Amino acid sequence: MEQQDTLAGLLALPCVESWLFYILSTLAICLAIGVIADRAIIRAGFLLIGVFGSISAIFLLLQAQFLALAQVMIYAVGITLVVVIALMLTNPRLEVEAPSIPYDDKAPPLMKFVNSIRRNIVLWVSVFSFVTIYAALSGETHWPLSSEPMPTDCVKTLGEALTTTYSIPFEFASVLLLAALMGAIMLAKNERKGEGADNLTIAEEAKNADSNLALQR
Amino acid sequence: MNVKLNAQPTQTVALRGKEEGLEAKIAVGFCLFAAAIVGTYSGILFGENGLETVVAHHYDFWICVILGLVGWMVRSAGGHKGVIITITVLASFVVLTLHQEQLIRYLVLAALLFSIGIYGMCKSRNAVRVLMSIELMLNAVNINLITFARYVDPMHIKGQLFSIFVLTVAAAEAAVGLAIVLSLYRNTSTVDMERFNLLKW
Image (tube, rainbow over all chains, first blue to last red; front, side, top):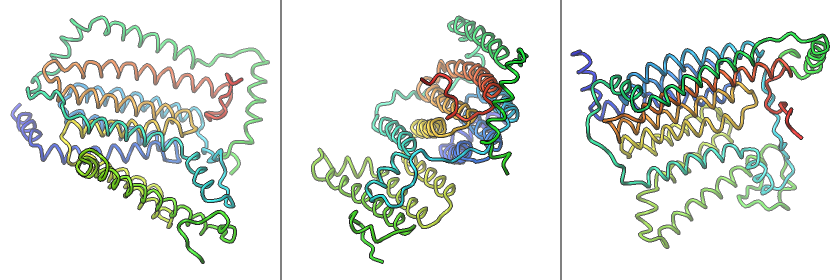
């Protein structure tokens, strides 16, 4: 208990919180870029564990202990495990890097510029979304900040709210989870159909084997 | 070789090969830089309290733009792509958040992770990676909710409650999404997003 108090006191210092925040967010951002950019998709799946871990540490910084642990259990272990198993089941291939607009060396510079923008349109959309959100955030000066301290027993507050005020969404969440799990099992179940279906699958695989870069090497 | 920043289409016929692409990139970068300078200057001149608005409040934007342009040039000169992109994003993040208060820092981190998720979701061709990007975006939303619970509503922590529901829906979505990917893979033996054209007309 005493140790927890010293930890909370240490976190209350703005300097310590800033340093921890920047270290953790550096980790999270680097690993997130690794997740979307790593060529080996199985490594991206494992980097995802690091992203979720650093985000759960950020939750701890924000004094959401219960959610940090739930994050570790649900995301960093559960979802990532399912993702990695799905990667192993789907035989990940090398992603073919074929831009829809080929690089034309002879085009005039302005056309080249327009082509490069068209190639990278997704990048510009995401940068634009970030800039928009940032401008909205930094332009707002009147946040209704509250200086009240966090309750010492967050879990108790959460549990009381979940079982009294928010009991109906809580129940609906359980129904949703049940339906989702049943649907997932139904979808992923390996059904043996007639011979025609099997022949079709084999033919499809033979057709697609040409495009499998991993097999060609 | 004749190096001109404002290369006309007629003059570039003589310039071929890789140097020309580099030249055009540097030229375009310089044009963007000039546009930034002009924007700043016109903001100073014409805006209401122009100097204050543009330079004092949005100088961080221009620093990030300059950072991106220098990174682009270093990349054109032959730097490692991943390192340059990561360093640029990190440095922009630090520049944009260092002078802000704690609440805005967390919100900007969430916005950055959300944008990375958007990029990955639209760009990647592997269906499983698309699902991973969606998980990333849901996590960014969770950071937002918990930040508001911490700094705006610390008594009732409603944000944490709603992030529990987001967590639940994310788990359901991951299970169903991966099952759909598995069943698609079984039927078409590919997970390439470009080849899922079953509903295309």
